Structure formats: C-alpha cells, structure tokens
Length: 326
Image 1 (cartoon, rainbow, N blue to C red):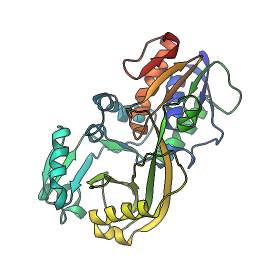
Image 2: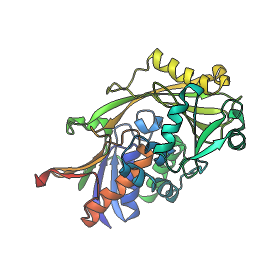
Image 3: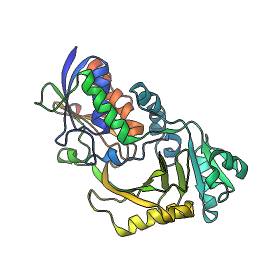
C-alpha cells in the first residue's frame, strides 16, 4: 500500500481524488473543516449533468473528450447514472440559437413535434422542434456525494486528522490564498416542486440572457439553474436572478408558475482564466482545481490524471503545470 496522501477539501474534486487513490491501494486522509458533504460545497448545488456535447458548444475540445469518461467512472463508484440524454429547446424567437447549437453539437439529432411527444409529452404542445443528445446522462449530486463519502469510509479512507505525506489541495475557491489567478463565478440555483410537469431527462432552454437547465430529481422536484456572474461572492441570491430563473422556467412550461419554491442555492465556482481545470505542483503541494461548471463532468478525469502523476510519475496530457521546472 502506498502513501500516505492527504487531500484538502471534501467536495466533488476531493472525493473523486480519494476514490481514485484508494482504489489503487493508497492510504488516504481527507481533511475538510465542514466534514461530510453538504450545502457548504459548491458541488452540493450542481445540476449533476454529464453532458459533454452540450458543454462543448462553448467549451474547449479537451473538456468534451475528457468529459465523455465521466458516466462510466461514476458508475464504477456505485453512482446511479440516468442515461436518458439531454433535450434542448428554444422559444420561437430564439430558433436561430437552436440552429447555432446544432452546428456546434454535431451529435445532436433534430426532433420533430411527434418525436418530442415520444420523449417528453408535457413539452410536445409547446415546441415543434428540439435537439436530442442521446448519449448524455445525469445523476443526483447530493445522493452521489453522500454515497461516495460513505463508500470511501468503508474502504478505509480517513476523514479528519493530521496532514501527512503528499498533500493534494482540492479546496476549490478557498485555494485562492495560493492560486492567485483562480476566480469565482457565482451561480444561483433553485429547487422547486411542480407535480404538474413530468420530465424524464435534463432539458435546456436556450435563453437570450443565460441558458436555463432543468433537471428532474423525482417526485415532481426539479433543479433549476443557473446564473453565471463574475464574482466570488458565495452567499447572496438576488431577487432579479431568482425572478429570471423562474421566468425562464415559466417560459419553458407555464405550469412552473405554480411551482413550490423549496430551496435557493448560491455558491461560486472556481475557475481559471480559460475556464479549464489545472493540476499544479507548487513546492511540495499538488493543486487540483478550476472545475468551473464542469464539476461532476471533469472531476473523474482530473483525479485520474493527478493520481497517475503521484503514483506513476506520468505527466498529464493536458492541464498540467509544474512550477518547480520554471
């Protein structure tokens, strides 16, 4: 057994790192001042979409390529991944945006009104055209993080204690004390209950100000997200943002106008200037950070690359910087 390793941070980045290390026989301690997963972690408020091709409309090719590994990795850790695809729609005024999206997502299939009715009957009367990405999936972030935490504890990963051995810093935005080019991108999200709408998969509405996603959580509960504001402020949802999210949901389907508002979530995603993650070696510490809005999509690839580096000396093909070599 190799190690010891100490991981700082118990969000999606830290837990995937612990899972990858422990699965290869390493001794691992995870230190997070908040303990078990919860609302203090940005990943607690994630949509949980494993949607590399949708993200590829605005993200770099490396994100798409690495993100396609995510669903299989999460399933290898016992997570329940729903392979229902992603539906993308637009209001009549925004049909040109739907055409642009289709050009940038070559795997997207165009659905007719009848085909929409087969996939999502509750949307069929409102949309005559949609895009469908059949290979994408989603998971429940809260259930996934909670189960992974328990799985790791059962495997022998220690939570809490003293720092020992190689340190891997996965603290997200808190690591700005060292990673000076790390910035916060605020996201505000809603959890609502709307039993009058049934959806089988994540639906993205192309919106003129920000793209809306709605992810079903079961029993009439949906996650709505998300704003994207350039600030590291992590605790204050604005009335305007909440109204815009609900207005966009109402535009998707009027029944959301009667939805029960269950939760308002706010946090700031950690991002580097190009919105791609980084593995940095600074002194004796390795920093894995910058997942931006791709937490569940890219954390497995980031963890695998980092663990290949620390256990096998294999330099990652992308996203790696070693400040000792400068």
